[in-house]
Length: 452
Image (cartoon, rainbow, N blue to C red; front, side, top):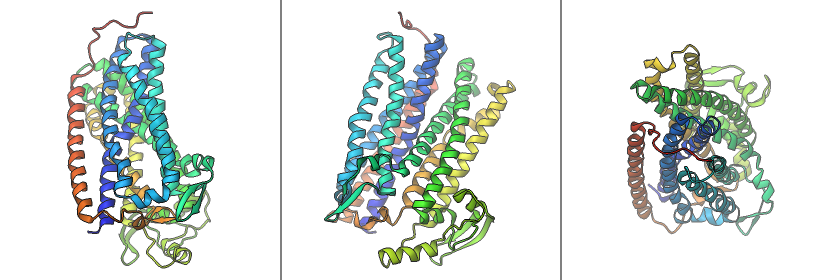
């Protein structure tokens, strides 16, 4: 295995680990703020207990997200020095702003919120957790600004083999970011909602603190239902933008080898990339054209035509991504997203019928479904990143040209094994801590509430 292959595995493994915690942090921060808002409005000790309970879980996940994310930025210099040299003038700016502004704001007000119980005013305390939630989304936005530039480079000039910033506003308002950020952040909300629903279902199933966790279950159901519908809507916009700016990725997502006018949507196919064919296909006529162009007649270009276009533009080479991974990753993401919508709406129906707290079957399924967003999020990330291949910066820098030239395959393999073991240990610690604190349930109210 060559250094480039090991470097890609290393970054993929560490990023996937880190990305387990990021969407959950986004969702739980907002849900904790919502619970705190209910406490602020009602003064109910039940909402205070729920706020402290889910807030503690949020802090555990936030801490693990920070720890697993630090390594990623070091990898840009260790394993991807040529990439860093090429994009450093642009890529470093949003990363620096994320660390100095959004993360600083987030970590500061987490401390204010955590240690502010009964020490600061009720309004300031509520504001602190909302600032944490806002900063979490801002942190994600700055990272997505950097990633969006890799997907659709804008606001740059090439100077002596480097991309240099020429228009910061163009980078900031990149159309790719404007469709990517809402979809990613709202998917994080769904992740947090299903996590809260699963934890609540666990206690309801056991008959533990039923009235208390019945409240959090109902809040999370509404949160997931709304978030699921918005994720589907923003995902549609994202896919259309992909078809316009990265047509090869869209064609790979659909296993579309030849241009079709109108194009059919693939439900199932066995991809044979070596022979550039697909077998056992099940396709729905017209649907891909409708999804890509909102009409019934527009063509969707296939990978064979796009490959020829890329060879004319960039010279001989293989410009196809790993199609089977992208194809099935897209279906896993979309299929699970649809499941989340249906599952939450069914839960709301049970709530309306007065059976949510007692439906053992639904509660049992909720404890399983809470883990599925992590698969959906990882599949979506894999589609976004693998679908861009062979480019590390689309149309500008090939992935093979971004790896560090002076780091041997042996050194790369050694660090990959080390990172994998350490991250595996951190994942085990995360599971243990979440289980330990979640099992106890919401704390009893034995401390004085705010005195004003």
